[in-house]
Image (cartoon, rainbow, N blue to C red; front, top):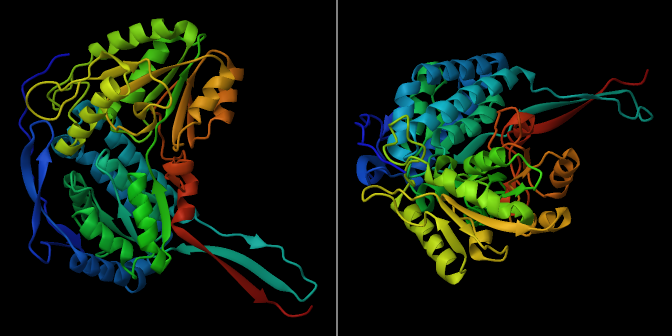
Length: 495
């Protein structure tokens, strides 16, 4: 593992809230520091919102929904605005990538190769859906009269959207795309760790021509801005991506107003490697599964189940591959792994590594410590000798830490894979299609990858079972979460 000299970061321009098409400080004039994970230094002071700012955003969003040009705009024209936003993201890709690296710490190669292309395609995909969200005509019982019955889909209303820090731009796109295609207005609260690219996306949305009040962004903390958004009686829906414990709080706080809720939460995803797998492919896939984005991925393949007969072979190759990863300057296109997003997350991951070494008494075969003396870098870490009941096998670490577990047979591994509160994703590596289907059918998870990992497309639904969430992001299924079905009966009279 090697490092490189840090490149010059971009200049930060946008640090205020976006409300009703205008940039403004928080009403209290309060700010908070946002950091660069690669250096640990403050890169900007950002508006810190509270109930007053959220109230202003809700009023703007409600007015745009009910009275402004958005309420009169055709579905096709809404789609054109999403296409225009996609075009602007593509045109400003270098700037957006640089901001994302500065504020999140991930390598620029990943941002340009994965994050930004998916942002662009998400806006285009949902832009294409905007004029295709239709209802049905229903052949109802005519014994009581002659009726014409049909359904139509209408927007839910004002949508509060609370996103995490691991994929700041992409999570904003996943939230905005279906909501705007359905005709809703939105209030986005970015994670306080990574607000900078969301603000630039908001500026591009204004440039694209979205009317004032349709897209609002309030910066701040969950306890203040997020809580106010959840409790506000003028907000019709909350979409949240993050930790399940926060989702539980949101559910309780949203009960009084009976808001619509969708959650995309965490995971402890199993990656199952059979003895007949292409071992080199399985190693590469497992590397991507746990070390991509510094392990800060909700569907990370953090539990690697390996059939007993090939366990040692797999671990040997996995260790070699992990030790070849290049850490350091996230602006260097040769860098494979950047920094953890914050000092808090850095400390959390190191704490779990200590738990694995001491309390759980697993064997750390590589990594297990900080990398360098500046910024929040952690070496790719692999534990063996892990049992499925250990904390490092059951609790979400959200860092570059893989727990390798042995299994005996198909029945054994499916049972172990399902022994978790989570159910976001899973993977299976085998040349036997019967085994692949058996795992795909048996594992309770929202996504199952066969001989691949971390493949995404805006057309493919994404979400989880159990404590991994409610509802789905992406695909046609996401539109249901942002639309209400209205049934209309028309009495045509007796014929």
